[in-house]
Image 1: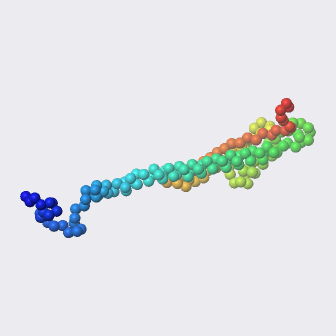
Image 2: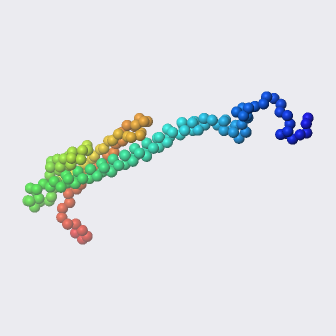
Amino acid sequence: MSRLPRRHQARTGPRRSGSERRAPDWALSWRDERGALTLFVAILFPALLAFAGLVVDAGTKLDNYQRAASYAQEAARAGADQVDQSAAYAGATLVVDQPEAIAAARAYLSAVGVAGAVTAVGTDAIRVTVTITTPTKILSIVGIDTVTSASTATASLISGVTGPGT
């Protein structure tokens, strides 16, 4: 054995060209991990897509609910405005003219282009239920094709001045 430093010792075995040199140990560890990022993305992508779908399409559902509530309230108010005029002029208590109230509420719903159910509640109120269904944007990929939101509103006819002490 020679006592020369390693860099001065003769090499044994075939000489490697520049492209055949052995990679340092730290580089070998990266080669062992080849494809791990692809696997990570393949597993994580569906979860991220589902989360994005929940965010976007749940926002659509909330917006639909808010619109349904607004339309139901407005239609109920339109119906409750239909007072039985003959009873009002006779000096009796004010009551809703139910056929006119239902027709007015349905006309409002038709004008805004939504589906709904209109019913009379007693003699002085009207109840409107509005349902809005829209297609999903992202969740249709996983089989959820529509989101539906419904809201109900009731408007009552109140006459006279009310306040403290009356």
